[in-house]
Length: 228
Image (cartoon, rainbow, N blue to C red; front, top):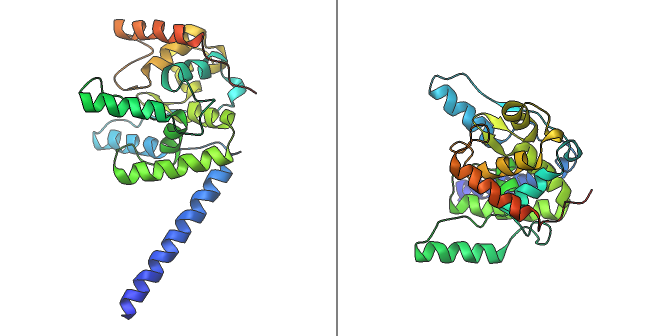
């Protein structure tokens, strides 16, 4: 019985520690740059396990140091109701479940808020545990951060190529200039890679990528710019 009570107390303190640390982390990242994410560390570990040089290009820049077209492009591509929902797009989730049920194109229903929660606080491999934690962190960041801050963290943390994370790194490595100088077509091409940036390249786009870029540019006409 003593052992059981001790285990219960340890579990209680572990739960309390998790909630306190997660809330403090979300509050801190309301203002502080995110220096590294779990995915960045996982990718570095994978590179070392294959005997490769570690590739990690990541340079944080504020949202107003990025092209005004980049948030519009990723909303057009990934989450067209980003400015309207509170972290979860239930229409998109329903469509994704229906497509999966009928065997059509398998796509996710994750919003930019959910992707940001996963990128910053969690691991990439999908599971029910991770989905539950992703929901928890999504609620937290939607409560604590503005939409502008969520977009800023998203565009600085998301994987955009092999060892490339964030808008500034991909702008310099794939387009030869700063994130603020990205053109509308550049931004649409970057957004086109986001479903799988290790398979699709904004530096050497395939015909499929160029077709998707054109579609995203058409969608961008219907997306309001994110406010300052």
